[in-house]
Image (cartoon, rainbow, N blue to C red):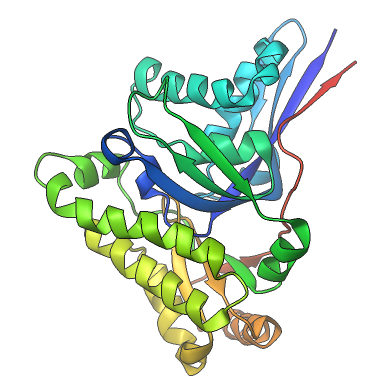
Amino acid sequence: MKIKVTAPVRVDISAGWPDSDPYRKDFGGAVLNAAIDMRVRAEFDNFLKTDYWQAKSYNGLGASGAIDAAWLVVRNPELLNDRQELIRNIWDLENRNVMHRAGTQDQAAAIYGGVNLWEFGQGPGETASIRRTAIEIKRAEKLQDKLILVDIGRPTISSNIHNFVFGHDNYEKNIPKLDRMKEIAVEMYASLENDSEMINLIRETWNLQKSLHKSIENPAAKVLERSIDPYFSKYALRETGSGGCAIIFAPEKEDLVKYINSLIRSKSLPKEIKIIPFKFEYKGIKIEKS
């Protein structure tokens, strides 16, 4: 019997850092994110295959957490009977087995799909509480209509960035910033229909992210932000995940998309920059058997 499992990747609307240990373990974390219609897959037919599939060209969309979810489920489909426990199992796999410091939001989005406010309780990862507040589809679609996803090329963030942000030299001074990011996730959930408030919150989030460590900002994102300055009062930009993509919240989305595409055509932007078409994905991890 052949089993195929697919799972969506995500964009984080608020910053992803508060879902990562040791901050999450010490204080609990909150993240607002959205699954999108790019999937990873794992197949088992006498042997196991995994593939980044539709998401393979893009960085910063949580593909590793999604593929870990697919990898575990294709090997043991019964894990889907308890989705919250599956989130904890993936956390354990990444942080303890693979020894890769990782957060919790990527697998949460991959498993459930949709647009959600996630609140992860403090304490050991294998027992931490997980609270999901789903945003209804009509409300989420209004958000989608104001978001632009941009590929800004290969990320410049070191693979050790979590060690820099949460390391002995930086963690304590970063705690107040992470506290504020956690608050912003909840404020965004309450402010999705308030364009000016969302612009302010995304800008504040991006400034907080950049202040965590000097290597976080991709130079291409700087160029993009400078290039669309004529729209400064009408948008907010921030990088996602590990810095390979950026989201732009823009109430006047169509105008800004046309402007960015004109810059791309005129080669006024770095060649790696391009707009990525996407939609929110409301179905999480899926199993197909044949």
